[in-house]
Length: 79
Image 1 (cartoon, rainbow, N blue to C red):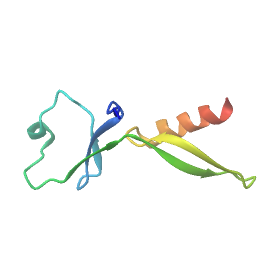
Image 2: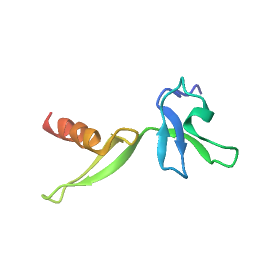
Image 3: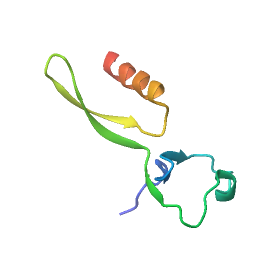
Image 4: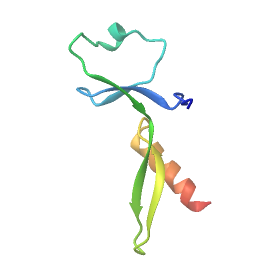
C-alpha cells in the first residue's frame, strides 16, 4: 500500500510549532541535537459539538493559525 506523505510535516514538540519552511535548515530554526521532532499529519479529525446537540467530525488544519483554521471550519459549515 502506497502512502501519501504530502500532508505531513515536522512538529517541534518543545517549542510547540510546525517547521513548514522546507528551504530552512534545522540550524536556522535553532534546533539542536536534543530536540524532539515528530513527523505527523497537519490535518487531523476533530469532533465539533454544535449548540443543537449535533456532533460533527471534521478535518482541521493544525499547522495554520487558529483564526485561519476557524475560518476554514466556518466555510465548511456554510456549504
